[in-house]
Length: 253
Image (tube, rainbow, N blue to C red; front, side, top):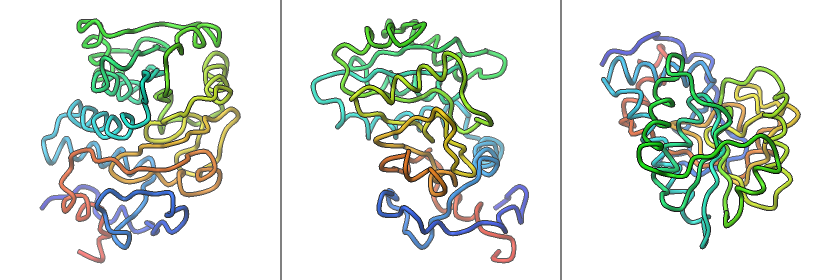
């Protein structure tokens, strides 16, 4: 089976920290490896290029995996999805559709159709479907939108963060941390360095993090275990044997 960039996994290490908070969802612990951000992006890209899976399908599968974990947390209320302008926000918008009618979305800003076409499509689908989409300036607006809400979904920043959140983004993150509501983060808590595990100021303190395919390395290191809560590994719909083959170092092939 073809694999791109053979030998890229030689620096892999087996994650042995925080395993008590990790549900491997059918993956045996001895076969479990964490991923760097670059490796996760390569996995997504090669799932598209080698398997022929559209990137939108990966987003849909991520959202479906997160919805399975979100439903038991809703109680009799709704989820408020705080969606950023990138693909993490696209995951959140797709999640809201799976939870409909028990979800509302608040957009930080509109996705750029050129940079994040899948996220932009998710926004158009929500608008066409009539699902609740709101825009908020600051914490006062977020408090108003949190009525009847039992769960906050952090879909703001994802794995691409390289510096501390600022301005309105920092306000939104701080607001989430100040509310008594549980927070479900998608892939990594917003404000966490997904590689090194350092928590920028501010950083979401999640009750539950649903990460995809494999946990990002930062969830297992540094501040990651402290801010990520319980970590669930959700499927992207990739064949598990293919993923394991993809991750195997060249000297094991």
